[in-house]
Image 1 (cartoon, rainbow, N blue to C red):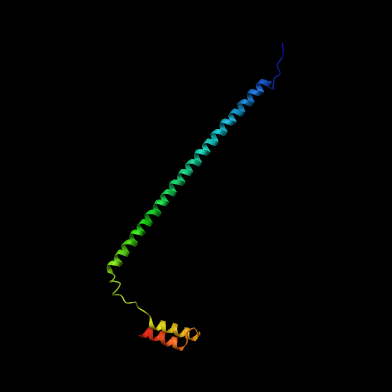
Image 2 (image 1 turned 180 degrees about the horizontal axis):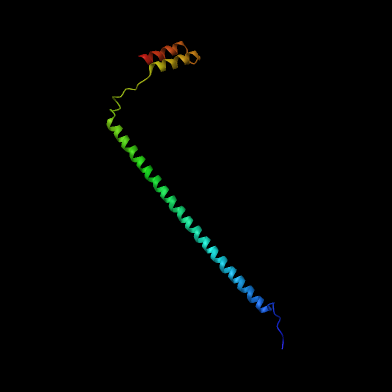
Length: 122
């Protein structure tokens, strides 16, 4: 009868133990990976929801601003006198200073300066 050595597993026992360890490691690794994937997916969904909420706030603010702009334009159009009645306001002193500066720079001669001045004052 063959005696079996104690203390060391046989070849089949070693293979079985290796298979159990490898199977357990694979199961644990798969579980960890699955857990991480679920965690990443939940985070991505939370980020997408947050972005949707921010976009909704931006859209609402833009819509409100557009409504206010339209309301103000409507109020200004109703309050403004007809365009034909409005006369353009010209700051005569500022225009005369501009003409004088152009004359000093040599861009306008005396005759051009006098004509522009007459148009402005007339």
